[in-house]
Amino acid sequence: MNRRRLLKGLLGFSLLGVARAAPRPLRVGVEACPYCNMTILDARYAAQMVSQTGKVYTYDDVGCLLDHLLGYGGPRVRPKELYVADFAASSRREARFLPVNQAVFLYSERIRTPMGVGLLAFARPGDLEAYLRERPQHREAVLGWNDLLERGRRQAWVPGFGR
Image 1 (cartoon, helix red, strand yellow):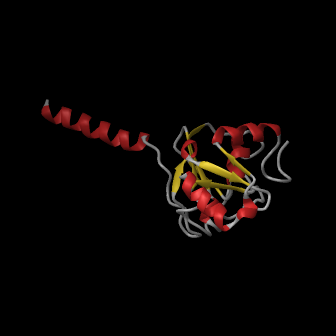
Image 2 (cartoon, rainbow, N blue to C red):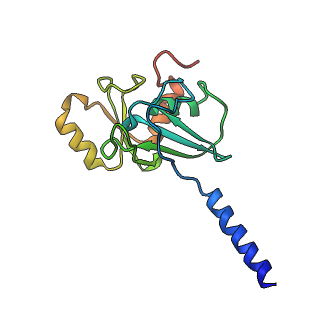
Image 3 (spheres, rainbow, N blue to C red):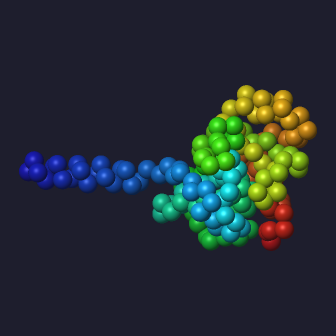
């Protein structure tokens, strides 16, 4: 009887590990975006989606993730978790991901991102303000995740893609 309980406990523990999704490290220069098919070359602009089935989709630009979620293209998926790279804490080779609902986004047409979307994600408003002190020409709009989705429903984020 104790052996049976032990086996059930171990099985339950291992299933908990599988059920809990988290972002995985990027393989910069290897992985390709499922929306635009570009190779991810700069982790600071990256985003990830973990689907209901546990499959991880990695994007080269936050705009690709948004457009994919809004049905503008890419394989049909049901998201479980969504992450964006914190621009201030990430480097070109390594992304520091955070959940999308914890990020604050800076939008400017002057910001050059892989797909020309002009979106950067920051974990803290203070990091965003520090970025803008160095680059005041990028001060255009500070948005939350729901604001990005609302704008995306009116028009695709990625130029040249969409309906």
